[in-house]
Length: 267
Image 1: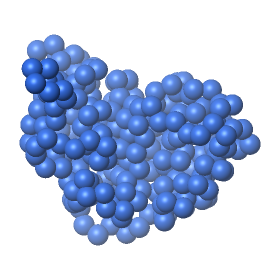
Image 2 (image 1 turned 180 degrees about the vertical axis):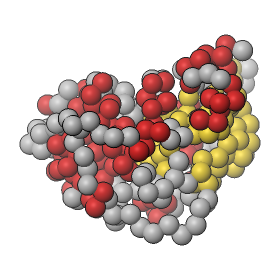
Image 3 (image 1 turned 90 degrees about the vertical axis):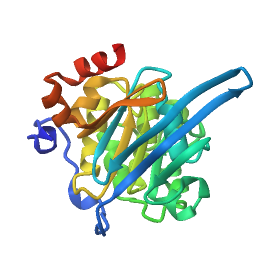
Image 4 (image 1 turned 30 degrees about the vertical axis):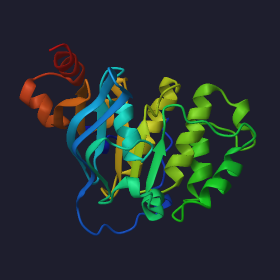
């Protein structure tokens, strides 16, 4: 992907790669696999099919963008990945395991940010980091002050003293410091201004730069998706209508991501 090797601008703050402690890769695999997964809500005559026999996979080391209009099934799919919802049928594998087993070792390998993630109002970044580090054995303590500086966040302020965008940035910091193998992010840049979104996306690329980490995120901001992903899937009515490597898809249809998205959704 072209943006991975881009030259940094002078005003960009570079994170030394030595700060990230990456374990050695054992073998390549799909870190997320959906096989004919369905999920309904409601009962009787009032049933909504949110996810309809959904099948797709996310390769290890990829940045995977999940696109779709509101109600397409993105959040329902993500909540099943992290065992917040149980599928009605089909099979899901996360890092080779069934997420519904609630395996402790699996939870430690996956970092998740929900669209509406909140933290206790009294927590500062160091307080929250100390709390979270007890649950994640690969926690990267060195990364906390580096990312706080990158996002221009005070280490002394409480969560309730930050703006909406700054609160979101605080959650992102805690997510990245887990040093997880897989990041699952539902609208992660929601509430961030343009500069903060740029910094977040840059940090995310740093996170997967060695190919041993994987990121899946949903977003309605197509410019963000196109800037960082190398794999993309477009959802509508609980199904994936288009999925593959972004550059190859753009070459096949001779369109940019926005035109591709509009064409798929409107057909």
